[in-house]
Length: 327
Image (cartoon, rainbow, N blue to C red; front, side, top):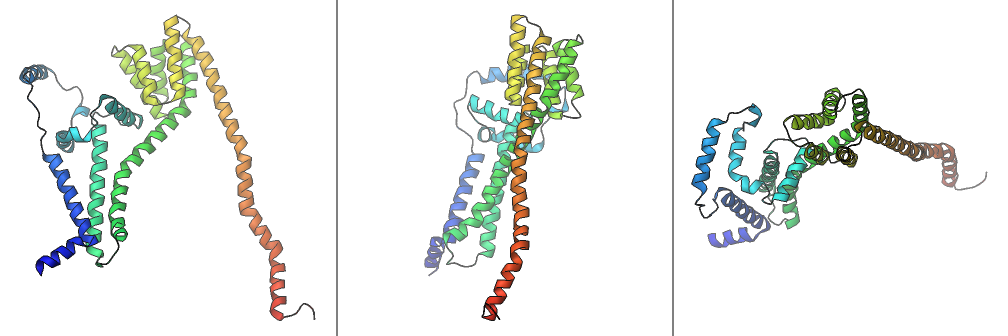
């Protein structure tokens, strides 16, 4: 009898959900705790000795490189939380940078947040089903919905947050770039070099457009560190993810390559950006009458019809209720 009861419980919809959940969590734990079998590299000891010798002489220059306890624990599961391909890893890294997360472990933390919140939602849904779903005859859909809904919500919360941050950051960069071009032109015409102009504009834009100011400061610091200017400008355009900035980078590279005046190139491009800003403003202004017309019809016509037609409708209802048309 006990075996029959156990089999009946396992074959019920709730029992199937519990078995699948326990099996899935077991596989996940085995994958996380298990070590990958790999052939030992004969040169690994030599590389380790060289890295230890070099690391003994190096010192930390900033406390921002220190990892927290959680990040140190996630380091063990790096192969599961980060893409393995070079291109995929670069794309994921660039997506986090465009959202404003520059840390080395940003991609790992992002995937770890999705995994942890998804598992938390799954456990929450299972707990809800076990505690509040006492009907054994409930359908599979009514049991799966409370489990899948919090799981999907927890999994997609980090995705939504990163996409939202990325869109807000790119919008701020797009709005501030024409002003930055005008300031760069003023600095260049005043006799400053392009590097000095970028550094100065980055300082001036901190209050109004902090995202663009941060990117310009990054360009200035990389140039001061000795990195090739062309590579710095290309990285700047890729980090911002803006078509206008990529065009600006192309103009600056061509100007430096062919030896033309940077001030002239900035003047022409700044004029084009001002015209583009005016065009966008005119497009938004031309859309306003249509939006106002829809709003006016939606909020004005129904009350007007009620005022005009309402008394007639009430009078007709009274006439029909009295059962006659005349006296």
